[in-house]
Image (cartoon, rainbow, N blue to C red; front, side, top):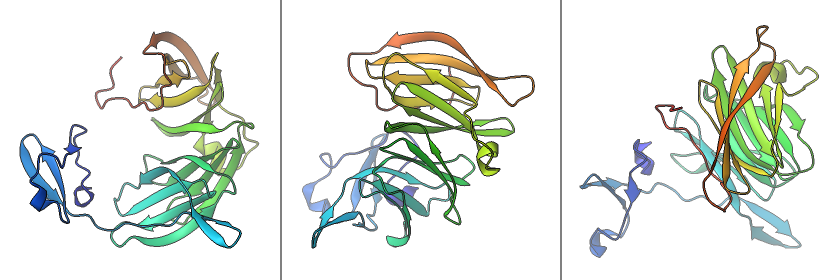
Length: 252
């Protein structure tokens, strides 16, 4: 959304050091391929507080996502609330209560679902437009570190990692409120911090040790179950891998 200074290219960087100091009063300046572009700052909203005694203490905003229309933002915080904001004015639209600190927040590729993970291993789903809760799934007692969506042909899946496990759920089963069992559960030797999956079903997981493990997820013939084939792993470094995304060209 260009009005917020978010350009399409991932190479764009907000860089104020290359701009004369007299120009830094109000707008933000974005240097892109040697050309100067100006993006106005719209609003700053302060909305996550926790009441401690008679005082309101500000809480960390742990995660944020913007819907596909570009008009609404969703934030999650240690106060256990998911809040919906109208970006053009900074107005708070609604608050969704999760009761426990929010660790991750994401919107489905079709802009229909909102999913949040909590510190105690709960995975919550809402209808994004109406903000009506659909289902809460418990993955255990450990924090949910990352949530991703897999928009496979004719099917939509939600992926979440918690502790040493990766769970994949069918959104059809979640909507129909069946006895929910993960379509597949992958286990790793150490804690999983980040996930990435492309349309072809190549799944990458970033581990606590810095290693990245790759699988190929396939549908069974009856299309109700999934199978996973281990491919290989890479040792990136000795630090935790927190963030992972596939490139648009979907290599591999």
